[in-house]
Length: 618
Image (cartoon, rainbow, N blue to C red; front, side, top):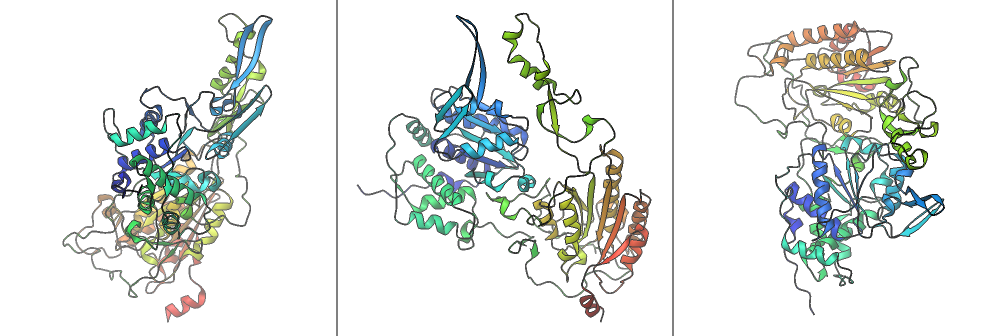
């Protein structure tokens, strides 16, 4: 029997995010090998709704909810593989171990939800690596031995800026990945849209106990899958398997008789794969293009102007006239998100060769105020106890300890919090994009980023004069937990804009440093402020506060406001704050960076090599 040509696939029309997400969840429900769904930047309020949709897809026509397990930072091995059971037998009290939630004691698929993959406990990460995509799993504990075929579906959420903190070995276990920062949920029983009748029939057939009909691939299917991944050399074979299995799931949903290259195209469209050879599924270029071929973000060659674009002193910053669009026009979100299934490929510079150092910690103050909670463990003393986990541990043996209504807690039941060490160093970068038209600042910033990486210091970045800013007369800022955050790579690759609100950028840096010194729970040990600028601020502070450029000449108002803001920073604790100004060596007005460094009570660091600066001066 000849194969009929495939009908248009649902994934080909998956431009809308809810439709794409519903298609991905249906693929996970119909294909056992697509057991992991990873959603980047999904709002916390939508996780329960998405989990309920996947629950209904797995439940089938009966509508019986499938077993659900949530894994968090406090998950331990005892919560995953076994459960203690206390029963009353003919000879008294009997103790036994029953299979835990991940050993799948109930036949059929179950659902595992991970609200934050980056903060998942080590036992939870170990379980994900062992079970996701495995053909068989075995658990052997005292009193429990079980072997089964994993059928659970994992639904995990991870923020884009936390991707560098997750092991690529763990990320590879999730074949289905979508970026969903702006997911819109519909009211009613179909929050992601109605389920097509053909999909419902295909899911019912997949849940039947009978054997599945074979789905033979066409001759060009395998070659097309490899062509779609030709720009991801060295990424391993899991991505090719994920694309092929997604195509097979789409073919089963469509009721096709053969697996063709069109299904591979539909799967690539669903996952939003990038490919240099196939621009049809490549996103349109944005205002910021990053070249990560050599590890550090670089600006691709382009028609950069050789002339100084700053207005001469005494001229207005912006002449009145019709409005011009700047950049993409999209408002900046909490962190830049790219609709790619593999953000770890461009998640910032690679780790340095220097080993990481344990962050310095204060030894004074209450112990309970040192770092965020990342888990629990058996208590070693009576400080910082975890009351809920202590009560849960004691409740396991309530039936054998006391028959009354009391809850008896023994010393072995006490559990304490495990807290991550809170870093007490910070790096603040003020990046003036309008000063870097003709030089590369990556070499000048590398020592400071290396210091922040080794000491695990968070990085607060203030961007001044970047193209695509929501308001060009105002500075923008964000905080990254690590130097490997993709937001830092995007900031370093930002193209220059027209205005330079340097005074507003220094004011944002001052506010950040004051909050860090005054409200930091552990107390900052050291703060480093690095300002990369030529000192030519052409936007007064009053204009930045209004959010619009005034009419008339501004003269030196913007420069004087920047020097005044720098003077306020110099009044902070000089034993803990160190200020540096990276001088790009631009002409004219080469003295402005030195005036700014003097106002900051800091020092000047040359941004270009000496021979290059000399040539620029001539």
